[in-house]
Length: 265
Image (cartoon, rainbow, N blue to C red; front, side, top):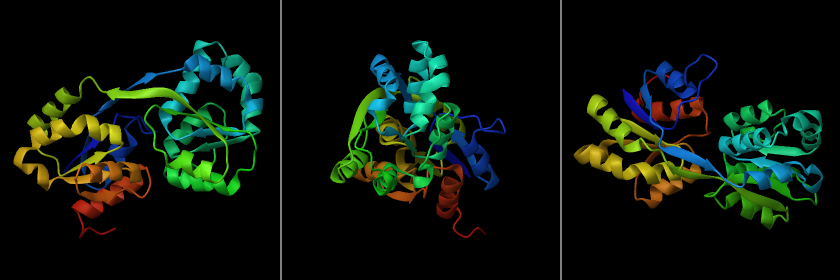
């Protein structure tokens, strides 16, 4: 059964994208199509703040791209050595909160000790932070220009200071239309389509509707998390499944339940 995932490929330990690998174990033929590209912003300002850990209570990362922004600005400003020698340890003396295993893995490659990765989404991470945070200093939150307000509002309600920084913005992938047209011409209409972000939905939906034609209503729409689920619902689209967590295993279990309801678990 053919399923479409609207995300870019990430190489796992086996050399294959973990989502492709996991879905294949469940008899699902998955294809990845990237729908987003990213531009980094305000890197000099981020670099300056990273050089002043004494001014913050810790860090929050809710996306791999924000971690990439940190890595990029350290490399651009020639601060990799000072990061390894001292800055990294100073930040590790504070809390470093993350959402998701992918983000946690990238954070660990920076030499930082992450916590909260099993929260699954920003809302649950906010609850985790609220249950633990007591610093009077603000948490530094590098994030995308388009971000949900759940985490900031929850922390604000609990009186936990936070400083957000827009360090990247999302733009449509330049090949999204061509890649979708190629997929449909070769594979046909997929049994399900998984959206990984509201932005991915925004940039791809029109093409998917046009290419699917009368078969559009037969597609099972899957969301990687509650924010994306809300975005689908706002477009009037039925959500057949929301993954319990943003992992290949949770997504595979959700898709299998929708497409193969009688299969043995």
